[in-house]
Image 1 (cartoon, one colour):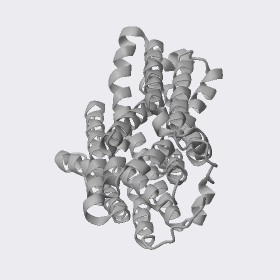
Image 2 (cartoon, rainbow, N blue to C red; image 1 turned 60 degrees about the horizontal axis):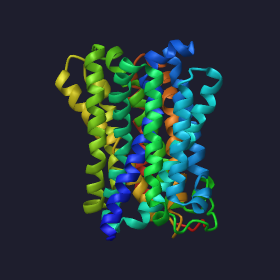
Image 3 (spheres, rainbow, N blue to C red; image 1 turned 135 degrees about the horizontal axis):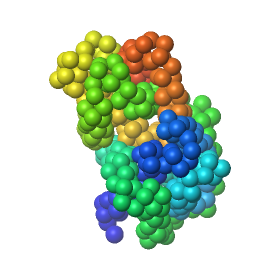
Image 4 (cartoon, rainbow, N blue to C red; image 1 turned 90 degrees about the horizontal axis):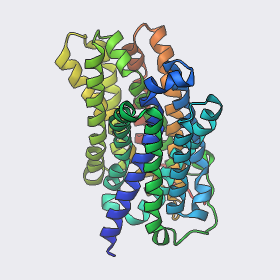
Length: 394
């Protein structure tokens, strides 16, 4: 098997695994209108479930690579998807007593997928195309959100939401079986001594620590925007819910495609850290423009939100590729896991922080304009961190 074919197949399977893991995260949120009455809770309470998913993902992404060396990337991904399948299937019981452990399983699964993929793709991806490879792999995140939103509600209308959840679990199990075909090839290095894992290892590699802090800044704004964009369009700009939802969908598509665009820029033009710097700078500039545009300036507002979507969601693939580039030999999974754990921490903090600021400032657009300092700070970190010491934490 040629190396190019091996990379293509690995990218296809790992991006598919990322898509399905993300679908598991958003399965209950997209079915909340059907599921909330059976759980006996208000729809708004689904935010706690999503927050718990990301909180668990922080720990899995940070400390899961300890097991990656023992299991190998294929087995680790299989275990993650199996845990997600069990979690999704268990949620179909609609019992609060089991919803928490089921959510924990989904969060741990979601946090494990990135380090495993980074470990394998870091070996297979040629340096000249590293950002593009990881940009394509990270497309699994918006694809997973889209898959959940497009498939599960329609399935719930026909078969009921519980069966829709069980079908999602079956899809995850099918990928577990499919990955078994490559386990022997991908896990040849399993059984090695586990490398150090966890956010503290970033202190030993300032270059990785810098992009990890930048990732936390970027993720806080990106996830917060996704959580509150509809409310901002309706409350701040006077849009109706249908139009607001359509613009959110458009920005999701643009944000997903922008990952490929930024990866191309990083590979062919400026390099990973400079690309991350540009992403942060543009995100901050566009966010500061939100209070300057009125709700009746429809075309201008649409263009501004498209620009915000293209910038605030475009950093993921470049970030993972850069963490792999800066990692010591054999530690790509641990390095990317530690960096991504900081981005998950930002994702946990973003929605509640923006909710509080939006209430205090009487408008989400003012909250985002103030929080524009975060991506600008991330851009500054990437600029000053270009010459930071890489370190060796193995």
